[in-house]
Image (cartoon, rainbow, N blue to C red; front, side):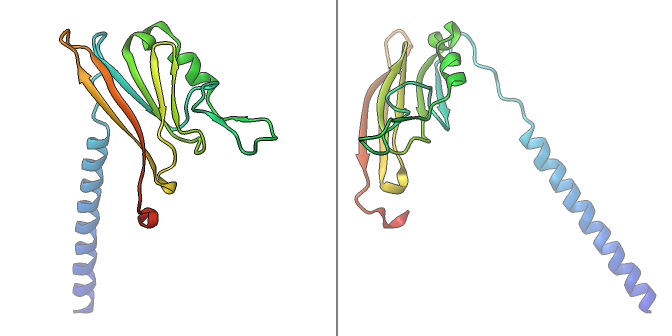
Length: 151
């Protein structure tokens, strides 16, 4: 009897493992779905952790009597200044530099750092579609939450 119970338990464990493996395989398949590549006529909103180097949204002034810290990415800056990115990217939204919330431009690309949500900062950006079908930025407002206790 003990041997039969052990065999049944082992079979149940194997079935559970097989089910878990099948679920993991299904999850992996869902994660590996390809995303359509943007076409030349698509408008791109680029969301990045850090912003492009040498914009006002990536300069962190820790103390006023010290040199500012440049926290942006020079690689991202080069990429964003490329002809194809200048043609397709409307907006870059980034974080990383907590004290330099604000907006800037890099060529034709509008750059926004909403600031740290931990301190209640965020940006409210409206996009509008023009008659020719192209998107444009309608407005960009920087706001602050009143009740920061939720963060």
